[in-house]
Image (tube, rainbow, N blue to C red; front, side):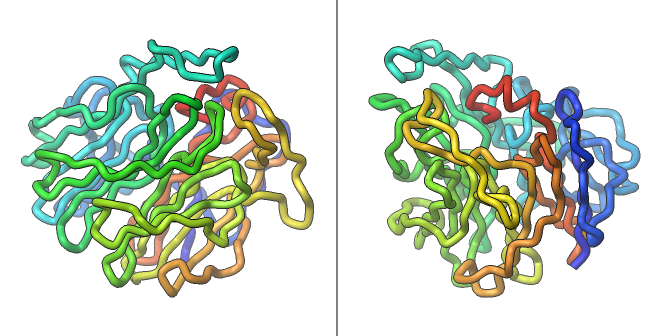
Length: 354
């Protein structure tokens, strides 16, 4: 298995020297993703000007075809894309054009003007025209790491949503059985908590071999929690802690063409050491680990029942490597993008990039 690792800088460079595992090499790509493959072996992504294609693995790109307002590729995990089996392109995204984070420290609640909505848009003709733009979630929402098409043809997106009393995050999914023309929301997954970085955050999802869906959810509880859907993401009724330790940071879960599951994430502690926890604070009512200096990877051959020992694929002393995105360009060739690689963005973080 060849890992191709690419780090996109965000803000000022950290002071420590970055280490990358010898199994990885740097990609010659100047875009963060997400990426899709189009007919003719064309790679595509979306930037601030619109959708572009590449025939040389992202070294050069075409002129942009406009998509829609509000998509911001500079914010990691703020939009995800799917090309359906019938060729439609569907994008779910945070409308960053109306982003406003507002939190009342006294009440510990989001204010009424706290706003970052989730929208969907689709193209039936390969990106030439876009239609059916619709809002999925109003209020305030944040980064998300799951958007797939299942073997049945259903589109499933896993999202998070900021709620009140007390202020915290809950997770859910949206499903579409008509290639993004209409959507239904699942039940809310509520793990409790109180704070603008507490609760059930930034979910990622993969389909299992038997057709069930597995969602891994960022928490402040020292590990991912997992949710299982037995009806294609319509409802999540098996919700429990996973065996995967994790800091308060999201992971990216991908079902490979081989059928294996691949996970990239930040573990709870560095290899061989214990990372000091922080809190309580406005972020979380409990003590949490913010460890993000190491990006680890693991595989599962049994639908997530067990995982290979975590392998550190990159390390950034005195900084962080987090908010990963994974793209299987070819069978066995994985592109891993770390969205944040410094300390400056964390210092400025609002919940859309926590």
